[in-house]
Length: 294
Image 1 (cartoon, one colour):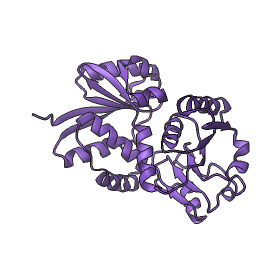
Image 2 (cartoon, one colour; image 1 turned 45 degrees about the vertical axis):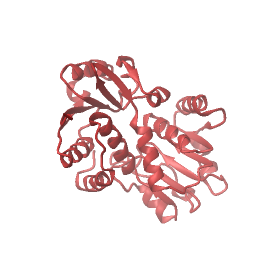
Image 3 (cartoon, helix red, strand yellow; image 1 turned 135 degrees about the vertical axis):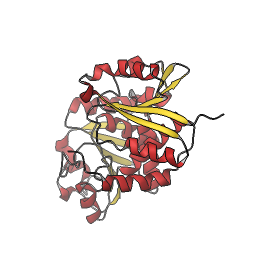
Image 4 (cartoon, helix red, strand yellow; image 1 turned 45 degrees about the horizontal axis):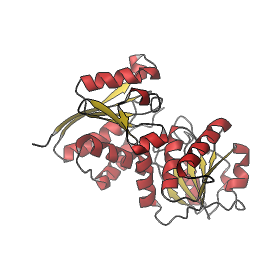
């Protein structure tokens, strides 16, 4: 008899505003499953990110079916797992843990989530030359996804030059020499402007969220020849996307990545096929109906 009851959770810092519980539980309800998604906030527990391993072990012992992992635990949790799928191993980050026969196996659905969202929302976008702003945890995942989609070359820009260089080096090891380069923010105008010759821009920094309003660079750098993909999903329409659309750019909001990574995790947890069309409707409703995180 197929299992119809699931207990899952999310480990991370400041995760109270997360939409993951609602996305998972709504889809489970529609499939007739008993599904409880709990938040395990290290801030509320008063522990640091180094406690991620203890929390994973406790969840396994308590009968959880799996966990999502978010900032700042995606890398730290790896040493406490029994195995990694190839994507998580290549990325060096885990956002989903599945408990199988007492073993904790790490996956990364951020990569597949962004790739699925991009293929759906910008199916005909050229990918020969792409600039990505942001080289943090989300940035690493979407850079892998962009190259997996067939991008010719990705230039990674970050305020921390070493972080951009490290990500570019990792991408080149995985995808082949010359597929990624690093640049500093003072080169953005030359990279993004009309003479830069790039096809599109992936934005993977917190700028645009409620706590970090505004644009990540001057609006005049945008022009109609660019497509712009966003990782932020609350709000769904960031100032960057609103400005880019006004400039005539094709755009992709962050809601699709949030949905498709959740759908991939749901599939791993339950073995059931989620309805992503319904989940996309859910996030449009939830992101608009719930107060933005402060």
